[in-house]
Image 1 (cartoon, rainbow, N blue to C red):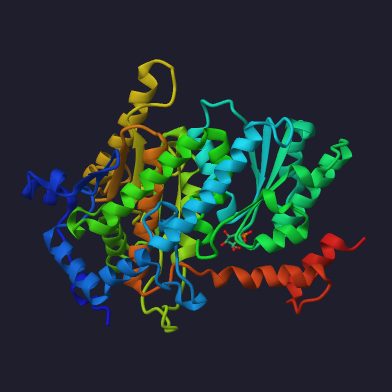
Image 2: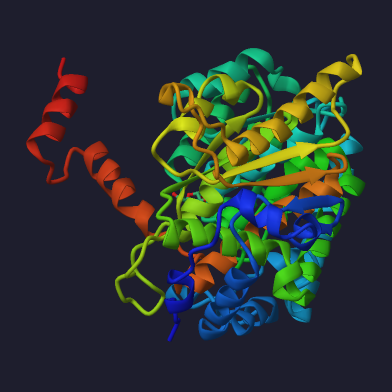
Length: 497
Ligand code: F6P
């Protein structure tokens, strides 16, 4: 039985007092792993909080749950299957890791063939997928692909044809490879977009449009039935969850655009984080400390959201990637035992890019009534070749915001100009943005999500909550569905002649 009593009784001093009381606080609450410095010192974690969370983790069998994940046990209990994204990095059960390596080899061979023009000339990659089949590859290519001109990659997810048409305008159909990414190969948006992409190829006179299609899926038989030749289907294991799938063949656009060596380094960076998570004591374990801090704010201080700000344009897609990872994983009101959760689940994850966000949403963070723990993600080595002043200003802004949130500023004469302070933040400082550090960063987020789920008793690996809306949209499309008066009226307004 998970025992929250010690955690709930926590009442740590103010952040500035924690710093004043402990000259070693920064090193005590910082962790360095895989080229990333994690600074948790501006959170309210202290020795007492760590002890309380350790006791909580023990009562929730956290270590056993983690070991079960790496052992390839069926930790996704509601769907009765294992969860093997760590095997994609070679850190899972032997058999799972071997299977993943085999499928990676198949992907690599196809990439070699494409590079050798076995499918004809290819300059553009049109990747079609949604959710976990789009957000990960898009993040990778956007973050790491700016200096490579190997291929142009566009990721299209939305059923809104505007998204697809933008790519049709930019790409030459005769030199485009269409990549259809769908774990289930049943997702409406993806199949409809893929159908329209095929029609676009055909309209331009591409002789064998299906010959220009690659499928990335855990349901290869469905892709084949849909028309993709078996040799161009890149399967991955059903036990790899959609939002955990960028390491599998779903990462194809990154692997082809960045090159295989880069993709292998990405996997190795993630593996480094896996080993850190598996082997490091809780007080020096980055994902565990991050989850402890998250839970302190949601469960004890009643924070409803957490905001991540990437102080680096290359990481501008990170907040939306995290939204799916965290909210689809832990946004649940029932535990894995089927009992209603008696506490808040995952916080709402949001964020943006610094310094832009400072001029838009930081007002609320500094003076609003909501408590919003903030996470800053910054990179020491900049991605631009402009004068050094740009990147140093970027970094200094990130650091100054964390300092200002914590210190606040009193103003006895004018409360409107006062800053309450004591507002927590964590800072993740990457030495540089390369495949290894990005792999480690994403794996860090995965494990932090896992720890939060484990401590809350949630199964982070299913997503039944997305089904109802899908079903109702389908019913509406078929002219059926038992809708309320407002929805009937909207449908009538949109579709009546
Ligand atoms: O609707 C949610 C979801 O099932 C996500 O979990 C998944 O990443 C996305 O849809 C896409 O699913 P698929 O890869 O099967 O097309």
